[in-house]
Length: 184
Length: 291
Image (cartoon, rainbow over all chains, first blue to last red; front, side, top):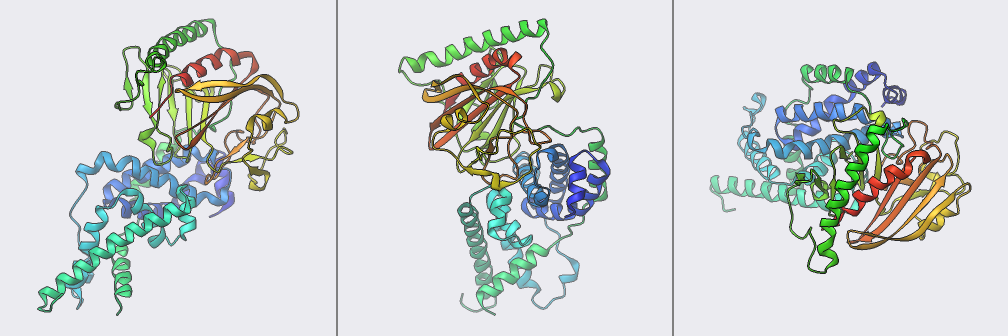
């Protein structure tokens, strides 16, 4: 991240902030979409988060930490907006067309549907840790710092999220084996 | 393929699903919104410099009276030892007949783990920036005035927070975000603050009762100085405005330990208006109940 850009935006430069938005919006949207499992809601949350980032930029003393700070605001926006919109959250997922002819298509679809179902049952705080670690690629220490939680808490949340997803994955594979005529 | 690798591949495939391209309309909406959205000033800074009008003083006195009645009503049963008013959860925020709004920190438990309620009169609100262990209680006016006229107190949870190195904290030189200037929280904060150069103790340290819990408070006059607190896990210190220097102020500090947490309250304002505003802040602090 361009430190100078952050500093200019922090001092009220709207053009600098626009450049920042273009640099980080896809990454933030990707995180919100994965945590919330609803692109429409993720778009709303992203907008709220970016405006919050603009408003609160003068609070940021360490421009080098802009991205981690932005993730924190985004995740809190997810926490804030998800409950209000839960009842309207989309439950239908469109499968990518280019995967339809793959040999292991059935297994892949089954795995992803089970993972999706399990992930939707996770608390948002576990989802956030899982996504920041596995999708963004932040080390657990950095996840903890970004979210402002103790390292042990981040580790614990990741453990429970991973365990739930692994259980779902194993259930998917067991079901496939049964359907293929082999004992699970 | 091992189960572990199969699981990793499956989660990778699943996570890769979909597009991360932000819709252009979303970006446009944000860039339009910021044109009319002012940036905020810091928590922990003196929000206001304009002296209050006589009309406002009368309103403030009325507000204090309302708070005092509310606080009295809240605290009498506890003093009588027949249970506390906060023993049954109530919706938050909610309004009582005396127009007090009750803010329940359990609504922000993810980053403010001390469960408590605080009653705010009209014209006050909480500021929650999602900073772990930080909550602002701000007088905004009713209807809300511009931010340059806001003032109020900061509430921090001290857990693993650091404090400014006493050899460096009193200064009017713009500060840098240098964590090495912060040291471990002192075992006796009141001794720490009283011993800083240029500090004059106005009153205390002395006992204070917050929500039925015994705490300690002190009032001091401070010269221009850097922000005191750096909360663990935060990206910033608290206060100091754009330059990292708070002006000379009169300040009240309160520390209460309860429920495994240490609540640190600071309120600072220009000495000419401190007493008047401090009375409102103290009334709000007296309304706190721990859950």
